[in-house]
Amino acid sequence: MKKIVFTLLVLITIFSCDQKVIQYPVSYSNDDFMQRSQERAKKIHQEELQWFDDYIKKNNQKFVKTSSGFWISNDGKRTESTANTGDYIEFEYQVSDLKDNIIYSFEDNKTQKVVIGKSDLTRGVNSALQLIPEGESAKLLLPSFLAYGGYGDQSKIAPDEPIIVDLKIKKIKKH
Image (cartoon, rainbow, N blue to C red; front, side):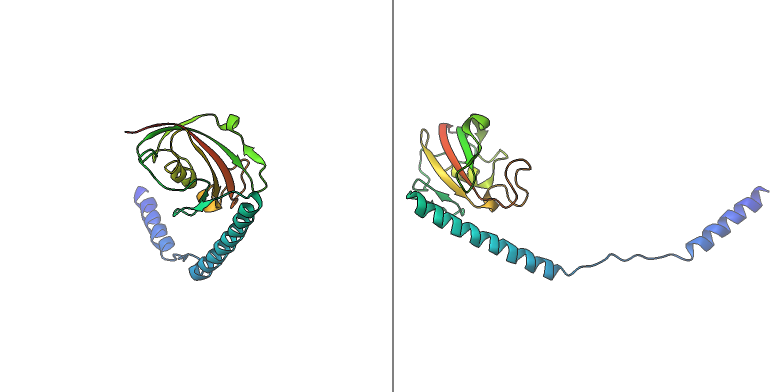
C-alpha cells in the first residue's frame, strides 16, 4: 500500500510540474519615466528660482548664491572661524514658508547640538552651518531639493516646497 501511495505522489508531482506557467515581469519604458521626471524637476526648479528672485527684490536684502545651490544672507564663504565636517556645533533655527509664515519657530526647534556631517539635517542646513561663524546668524533660501525634497517632512512641510531658514550659530567646538 505504501508503494502505491508513493508511486501516485511521484506521478502527480511529475505531471503537475510538466505544465509550468512562466510569468515574465511587466516592463515599462524607463526612458519615458526618466524624461517626465527630469521635465518635472526642471519646472519645479524654474519656479523656485523665480520665487527666490522675487523674494530678494521684495525684501531688499543682499543674498549670495552658494556653490551648493542655495542663497545665504552673509558672504557665503568659509573661514577659519566657521565649522568644518566633524566639528561640534550648537545652533538655533526657524523655518518659514514662501510667504514668511513661520512653520517651525526657534522655540519649536530649541537649541540643536550636532556634529557636522553626522546628523540628519537637510543638506542645505548642513552646508550652511559651515558658512556662518560663531555668534552670527544668516537667512537661507533653500530650494526644495536641499530642504525636504519630494517627500516633505511628513508633517508641516509639503513635498517639493522651498523654505526659508533663519539660522543662528551659538557655539562651535573644533575637533
